[in-house]
Image (tube, rainbow, N blue to C red; front, side):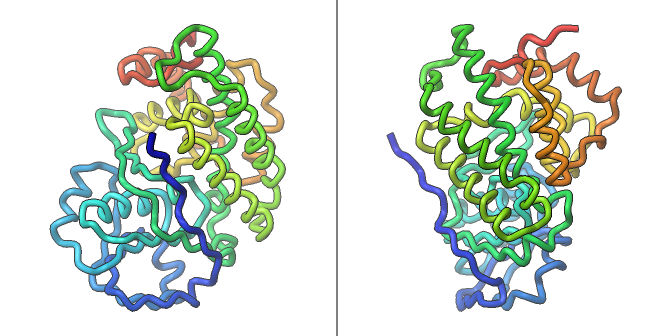
Length: 316
């Protein structure tokens, strides 16, 4: 079994970065405008990624120039940069402008395919540079939205236990009690730092990053994401088809956490408080769209062969 690591993480101001290699930059317009004055990179190729599809990324690969890929921005920029770095056999440096997702730490890139999200094995960044000043200045709704990939432990681990009780965990995804307990500790760490991270306090953002790193490495150790990805993410994948591309990850997963936790019979108050503390928008999705997505979710998860959870047996 080959266990992949998280990237090397270095905390430093972006202004202190010293890069001599020609840079291929993958970014988004808003993120680049926010930090371009702090970065002095020898950029020889630049793209603003707007689509999370393999076909789109494949069109970029032939034109890439440079000796190192830099990702500046959020999860889409990071995922595209990971794919490009692998295809071009280049090192990758990631500079997140908000702690909006856990994608900066993972070895996979999420792509939209046939109305669902699939993960392609790419690579973790070789270097992850964290500027807490930049993170604190991010728009409030995305500044700490990565907490959704931690609060999803509440619903994802519930699904994992439920699937084990029903005999639905496939080989390689068997329920492991101590792993569940470790995940619960990471979840508690996220709940504890939500208010501070949401305010942009450096200590709160540092704890949020620590929890994300622990969550990703835990999943790396066991070879799957069942402790943190379940029906809440399935809801997000499905509802994106109705809402269209462009909504932030937290805008989709945050409501999914509350919807699935309610159906699992969990106490919503600590989850809601953490989401609200991190300014996650919870009213973006119209009620009619929520209801239609929930009605179709059991068929959706079966059609896409997603691991068993509460979404498979929702009834109306």
